[in-house]
Length: 418
Image 1 (spheres, one colour):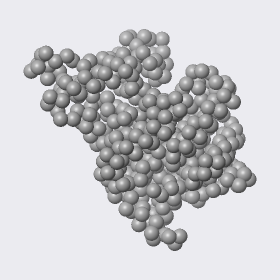
Image 2 (cartoon, one colour; image 1 turned 135 degrees about the horizontal axis):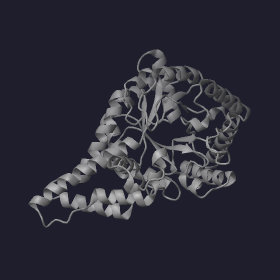
Image 3 (cartoon, one colour; image 1 turned 135 degrees about the vertical axis):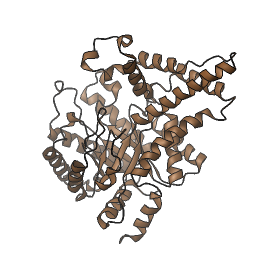
Image 4 (tube, one colour; image 1 turned 45 degrees about the horizontal axis):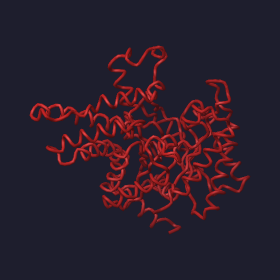
């Protein structure tokens, strides 16, 4: 498998030569079904697939998926063997930085404490064979609320974390890996074009001063119009950001690509990669809701069947987790969950379901649902996986990823260095 930074250089060359415009897809592996669907789609389309795993999802403590870094990579590889996937699969760390793991904020860790934990997770990611580390020190809980961290401090901490990761990589005897830096979040202070340019310039000078230009990031995260509540991609901004970073040998990566209204504009705007996560959770939720509706119909013909209570189990688990509170609007913060409208409760459960897929009660309800339906459906789990795969295919098609592995291999063979 080609190193990810080599793949990015091929994407840049394809763009500059006018031969092709491709955007890589990064699926956030927030459940077993999403991971299986993403590997399946990579195999069917002969396309590289990135897996952007946050420390909330996958970490040394198992995260909310239950996977450590090593277990996650092993699971990905097991699905690859199952479906005969020969396309490259790249496990990646997403948002590796202080206080970006919810537990670190909840435990009120100091800067030294959270940085220590994050660095241990960087090491675990390297040991597991991650292809990319997203270095993101753009949160500082020591500052007053809503105060952006100074850009100079973001640069300094980014340099320190890359230096640590590179020292660990060398210690472990591992080959070069790819890096991603920056954030789309306002608190990072990088959304202003001048600040973005300043960050890139200072980072380049800092890496040069530390003799670390070989670790220059292949992806720079840019604010391109999308977030959790907006879905309009700003192609004009993306092109301006691409023009800045391409000269450094990097590409722009977009986060919050979920439900984006104009995914077809990503390749032509120069976007190198795009993360999608919450959308796949919603698709998984909807598929299970549809299966429960089938179960309700089944109960009419087979009244002795004990219903699974799938949706009820999901709602209870999301409520008990307390995760739903992070998405409350200002006028909802004093309301109890039951006081919210039915539509809002459904949205909160649909969005927060990714945190509780491994809850024992949810797992038991899901298994009962599958067992009940298996008298008619040969593989209810495959029904869910295929629904998620259809959502992934939507991006594969718009990002020009069909048979992209062959295209990229051909680009490598035609390069002067080959």
